[in-house]
Image (cartoon, rainbow, N blue to C red; front, top):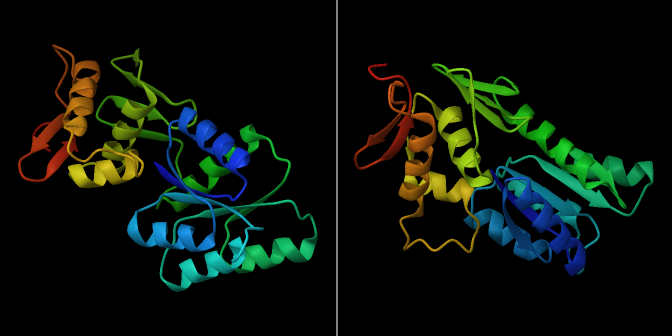
Length: 225
């Protein structure tokens, strides 16, 4: 999942970026409202974390502009203001949640997981394809009653494939949702990570679930389905 963070305080922005990356998200950081709007226009984001008080253009104005342009990714506002009126303004502007500073990163991550679940057609905590199960809260994978250890990046690629199943996912879509803006498009990293996953979830004797769709990308489904 790819997250846009808009925060003008460099220390707070770096703290958010590091914590979200450690939690398995790809993260892009904007330092003000106009940059956040530009990034939303040019990259697909699964969710946004926006500071309300930013120089030049505040987060509320920025989110209103995003919503008018049709950007529907869930948004969480961060603010040092605690007044009810400010929270109402933020929610009315299109925010999905509101967190007052100082905040616990554990709580922010929980709220982020909650808004991402609500975006799905059927809010669920577990994904299942054939005998492969992915626990989105515990961030664990199991197949044949065995736990499969995954890195954060492997988990993100597998989650994307399972969410799309039985539809294929293009390499471009995988890059856009799993890697941040600093990704080197000249590398073969998507194939590398898909091969990592194949070694872990398509072991000898197990039905192969990850299939290559030539000219498109990859699909995760039972053979013949």
